[in-house]
Image 1 (cartoon, rainbow, N blue to C red):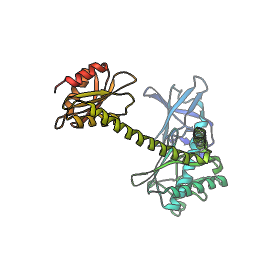
Image 2: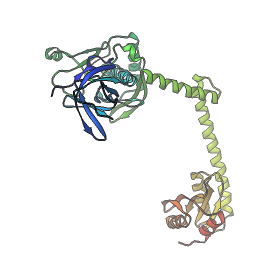
Image 3: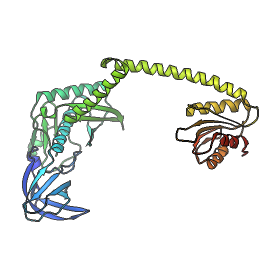
Amino acid sequence: MPQTERLFQEDSFCRRFTAQVVACEPYKSGWRAELSRTAFFPEGGGQPCDLGTLQPQNGPEAQVLDVQESKGRVLHTLDAPLPVGESITGEINWQRRRDAMEQHSGEHILSGLLHTLFGADNVGFHIGPDQVRMDMSVELSAAQLACAEEKANAIVRENVPVLVSVPSPEELSALTYRSKKELEGPVRIVEIPGADVCACCGTHVERTGQVGLVKILTHQNYKGGTRLMIACGQRAFAALAAEHDALTAASQLLSAKLPEVPSAVERLLAENQALKAARAEAENRWFAAVAESAPAEKPFCTAAEGLSGDSLRRLALAIAEKTHAAAAALCPRPEGGFAYALAPAPGEDARALAKALNLAFEGRGGGKPALCQGSIARGDLQEVKQFLETTEI
């Protein structure tokens, strides 16, 4: 069976085409069709497949749900069958295709520059629904990435042509190009002057100006290299617009101009840390007073509102240290029940008491012999206090 003619490799801007249905058979919960030629790009090389419709001359329209390649055949998964031998009109989802071309072409520009500037190879690439993932082979600094991003957008503004060719074997042997693996047979080369020469099967814009913008959103060290999350074109604009809206909202809340937001946040964090330290010091004095009032060598339970898990821990430990007996600290929860911290008498194990408490009051939690923490779903304060102060384990 002859291979499918790939219109998407001849013209990435082909949105509508005609073809004959070569085969159509049931597949999973739908149908799978092969056409004499297609503009639908099959998933591959990190780029998602095209979606769209196939309309026969007679019969209902079929939605293209997935497109995959198998041994030179391009197979379209459909929600309805197509008559074999009949002519159809196909139409791809142009918004999805345009987005894929923007992301893929932008990735080529950035990858090519990172390779040229810093010797970084692209070892992983995937166009996700919101961001594009790029895995580079070496660790890259923020300064290096900023440099490459600036040069990438300069290439975009220059609006240079994106050149696609299939060189002869002789021409290919003399060509230096990027490729993740050794290739056999005809090799499709995508060249972006000043940025990249790469073997690629994907769809691309005609000129770099159509990419619009290349933006690195995040980066982190990953498996000895660098993982980038980037956005290009409309995605980059949407990401920057969202960040600008968030920054504007923060500036209004902080009563600071946009450039002053980072320093205003730093001041706010410093004030918050100082308040936390002051609260912890005040709580420690309070906890010491509670411990002083507790009877010596007898189990003791106390409750207070608004205590964090760490505060409950420090309160229970302060009481147990002073009384040399088991101590429990409780804090009411908005949804009912209590959060708790249990500290045992010296040399004893708090886990047995925590297990009994959980069983009696529909609780969950645990910990180590020296301290247990958790929560209980039912029981009023007097019931819980009586249980904790009278239960012997």
